[in-house]
Amino acid sequence: MLAPVRCFTCGAPLAHLWPEFKKRVEAGEDPGKVLDDLGVKRYCCRRTMLATVAYIEELVVYTHIGFKKKVKPY
Ligand SMILES: [Zn+2]
Image (cartoon, rainbow, N blue to C red; front, side, top):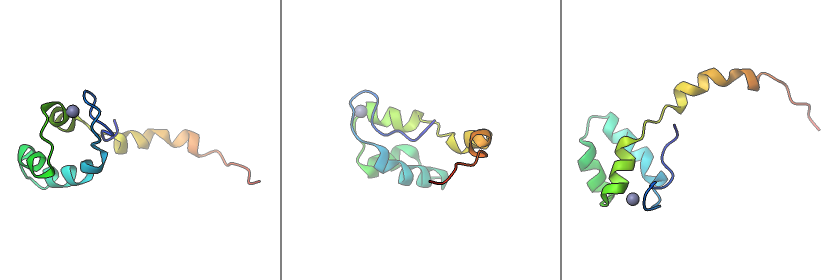
């Protein structure tokens, strides 16, 4: 749902790499080459980056109900 914060297997931090990875892959670059450039060498981390489906933008559309309530200011 969200971008991967850490590798699910080894715990290496990946969140800082996600925006560039996503941008370059959406621009048409080969995902394996992008991961090589970003220095992601372990196959567990590569799996985590490649298998992530970040669909939070699509899900946010359905969360408007809770946000319509006004919160009283203090
Ligand atoms: Zn890993």
